[in-house]
Length: 281
Image (cartoon, rainbow, N blue to C red):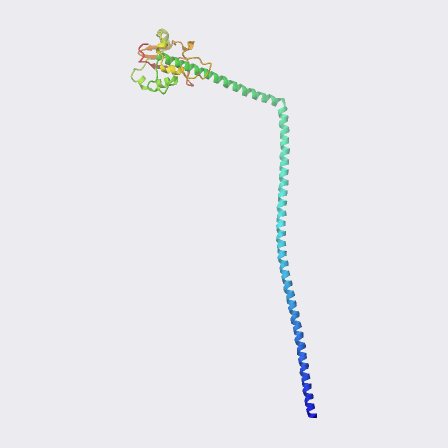
């Protein structure tokens, strides 16, 4: 019995030692688990801290970019302000210079010499306009005189552009006399009369009413350019038979020793009118 009891006692001691070792191992495992849990919590905290740091860095970068943008806008506004100030200074200088020029111009215009100069200039312009008007009226009178002379020549000679029915009037007569070869090629060269020959040999009297031509009638029916222009068929000193007309060798020669105006051209010439068809003259 004693032996069995000793054996049980020894077994109990051994089991107690095993329990103590198991308890020690449990305590070690609990300690390690606590360390692991603490490390996990520390890692989670570190990860959250790292995320916050990253977000803070991103916000800092955005804030820095915004600061740079605000700085550039501030610089541009300062530049615009400086440009505005310089432009304002330039405009003020121009305004002051304009005021000075205006004062000088007003002083110059109010002076008697300036007023006299302006009056002389205006008087000169008025004189030029009056001279131009007088020259225009003289040219119109000379033109009317030339037209009356051409109408008188056409009525006396009876020449008309029969081959050109679309042309009428004194201009057609001049073109007929200068361009139509039928009036010059079939007749010999006319003998031009001088002023002395006309005085020695008086011309034949011609009745203008018997030699009236359709061209003259058409010229008389044209609208008058001036109400003061006399009728070419009316009896006036300008339309009387001229002493410078002479009929000889079937040709009528007109000698005009004074300057005349035909169609606005100033010249002196002798017009020879071939009137071979007018045997009655």
